[in-house]
Image (cartoon, rainbow, N blue to C red; front, top):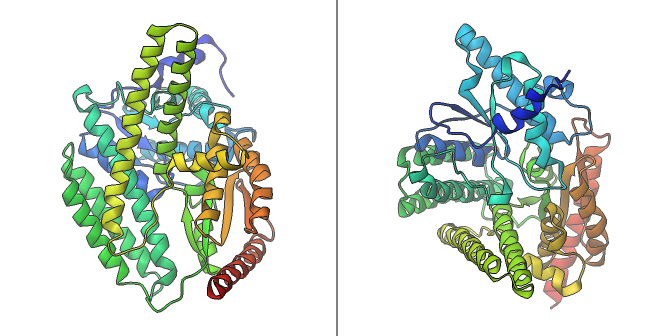
Length: 453
């Protein structure tokens, strides 16, 4: 299926990277629905024609183009791209121009297979004549998702700030929905309210463009919270809380995880999923750690100029992390004046859990370190159950399962590992119901212990 001439390999540099998006249609795969639409709104506000592609309409083409060795999100995102391009080709006919489209697929360093998605998908696109000129726009964790070359250089700084703001707002809206929906008076009211809230926030990011009206944003969010709390039955007892960690795409993409949050809610849980901003903080924090270690090493070996360069990087990364956490604090503070909404975990606090019992280390890297520490944090926060979500055969997910299981057992914490591909596992609902029985028993034990104390 795939061509092997040298032009195919040249395209990995010529058609994959950071391209000027002016005059292009920027295609964003849907991961977490709210956050992706807000991000598209940010791009639109800066004059870029961005769109979130419809997702999970059919997996046929993605499955045909993959061997099964790739993890599930690769099939989903590739299918979404093909479905979108096919629809555009049918809509535009002879006016369809593949060079007008830039498909967004970021990357991370290994050993996670996600780091190779855009390279593999580039080769797949090159094998299809009508789509070989579609470019893939990529950001990487190596440079903290720098946007150099993609937007006007004079607007890059403001764009990064606005984009990160949209990530926090997306997290807040998700968490508001998960906090309110299990206690809604009228079934379905919370979903309708959140749809309107998402549309309102999308308009905000489109209309404000490069401006940064933080106070106006806070007011809008507080109004959304006020409307949301009116939907709740305040007399209802607090349900057992279940925390979800795992691979960032699978835990966020409701179609791929077969709407796990809603299934847990139907079985009586209140659910919180690890946030996208927590991953962004982890990326910045990892750069702080690595630049610090590199600076110390260069100093010890007498390479003082290199040590100074690493020190400068370290300062920049620290400023980035501090800014991200400051924005989180400001926005969550407004929400929590009328709603008890949990902020993302501080990554420094998560690493401290490893220091206490030497169970794992951030030095190993990958999402496993963040997930394992996140599970320990849920134990400390008094949750009643935890779930680890990951693609079938995912290495970080498997590491998390193997390391965390005995830790959760020691803490008497019900723990469920859920691996996903396109199939629905037999007995899935029975497994969830059994897990929720254990969760409810733990909640009862914790409540009894508090009463006796």
